[in-house]
Length: 141
Image (cartoon, rainbow, N blue to C red):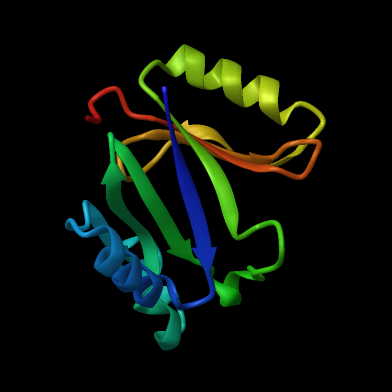
């Protein structure tokens, strides 16, 4: 298992990650816009160019990752939801075990499900308010 920091921004993810890239070096592994997601064409114009996902290798197989929130979907950036702990799992059963265990008595944002980007994914806040993402992609590096 690998653990990656995952950050949320309110329209400044790209600017922040250009800065982080200038410090850490390297190249972005992923950089996807909201307009590329299913239904992205229906977003307000000022949200289509926001980042759905970006990742930057920062050493030893660890990635700094982020996305922008979508205000038109009711998202609000507030203390506590700008940072997630992302667990990158190779085994679906282990992903389910961790999701079910950590989310018990918490608030599920997205149930574990197959996604359009090819991973099995879910997110939640645990009963202590810590936000988690479980990503299972057996073919990932």
